[in-house]
Image (cartoon, rainbow, N blue to C red; front, side, top):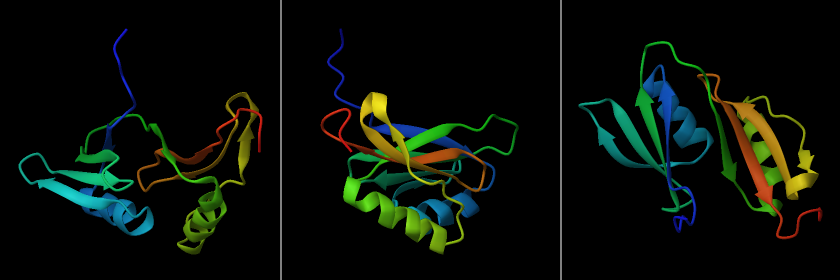
Length: 126
């Protein structure tokens, strides 16, 4: 078995890079890393330098995807409120008993299903 410790980078296709950049920077708070003008991609840091999100402009047709971002349990409610204040429709918290986590769901401008999730240390505790 490979000694994988986690996931570091995801690539998200977007129709309009400038529109997606505003959302991921100003709404989600990701930080710009590298702008690849040749491919029209934007590498962004998530969670300091804990992870990387690559916005890849692609004006073609593609299915929407699902991505989950980890947040601290104490930040989940505040984050949902901040999203709502920015005009984003956010679900009520959903508790996932099988993994001991709580999530809220919302969409990005391209219709990707995004999730903020808290992972409790002990499954079944909430």
